[in-house]
Length: 261
Image (cartoon, rainbow, N blue to C red; front, side):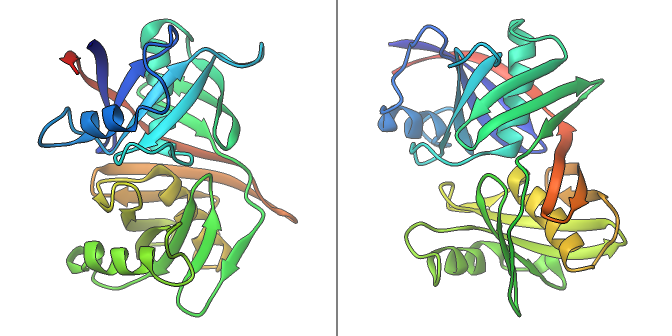
């Protein structure tokens, strides 16, 4: 089979994307998806997305996301932003979008070179002595550290991801260092990729909300520096938690190709 694919990246979080509106591939082809994401024997990516026809008249398209291990996964923020950019490239949308992912409906807009992706409202943030835990479409463990540049993210992140209380289900793990009020450096160990990634959209969203919830910052526009570049998260605090949460950043097409599989 010859398959046309596109490679996109959002602050270094990279993805293989397939236009699957004609049902070219099936969602249970774990071997294909894992193979395409393999950096030695495939295209290489942190994850793979299918852009599909919507299930309802209100949506422009549907997002289906797979981790690098080939398994369908929870929401990916940077992936969602890249898929919006891809939909604009295909002419499916112009500068606004409504779509559904595994965690529910999303709205998005493209303004200049940035994609604004509305994330799900967040009501529950669990606070512990050493960390916080919340779900921003994907589960995230958030902890403040010092000397982040030299932190052993891969090994410590893997240990937390596989340990109690997460075990087999796992959690993404975010390590955060404060640079100044409302500005944070973040490094993330992602489950499914099972390694540190250059950026994680649901992760930086979790960090921004966590830092506000613990009064580390009172700003409702937070700047996050990842290894792959800068992202912004804006939100509104309510009695029930956080709403109108937006993940903002660039999303760029790297190349288009064909692969025989």
